Length: 295
Image (cartoon, rainbow, N blue to C red):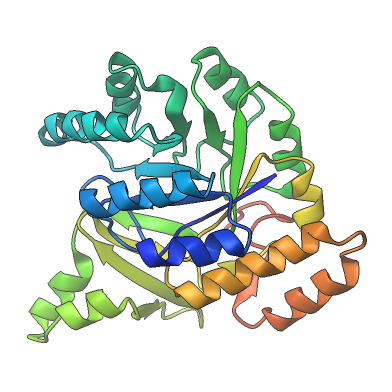
């Protein structure tokens, strides 16, 4: 199993590599949602050079919902990506699959539609399409993950640590709210420190706005410290997403997981780490179905 991370800038790549990262997931905000940092084309080129020198892998995120006005820009971006010979392209919109296939990039594609890869037939289907891999839904149980990962002949990945997105609107809701209240909104968007609270619940959900709209995340970040050994035998790639966190947190989290998979018996350490982070982390849906209360 390889560890994939979302670096916050070019300079963080080498330290993350030393900490055990195998794959680096980056993107440009014009073509990607929910990035920890938007890499310019120059920065992507520099990152690619460093990653190749380190004998690691680079995945580019192109996961926007594509509209007609995006098509030519995506084609141009894929032309740029082809010059770099990156290792993977993460996509969500099937229209992007069509473009990539016409440009001879289907073998680089990794399908991550967030919640749709939920059955054993998904990897079988995409194996026939000859893409590189898929990312399993973040809203299924550990047992289901293990079952799905045994199917097909493509790379299977999972976001195993980090905040999970549960809502996306193309509307700039944060910006609109503060314009309505006549307050300066840019500082809130840049700091990414807003939360929304429902009247009937005490949970505070983090908010995030980018070029593609507004995103709301689960209150607690997902952690899989106790599950990592089980997942190691099921997954090809374990993704640690640093969104709404910082570079030091990402590096420390990566070190924790690397230490666990290297231990002959990680049970005690896994328990300690899970306990240490339980205040603002949980196991997501690894042990429960996504059942919502009826009022």
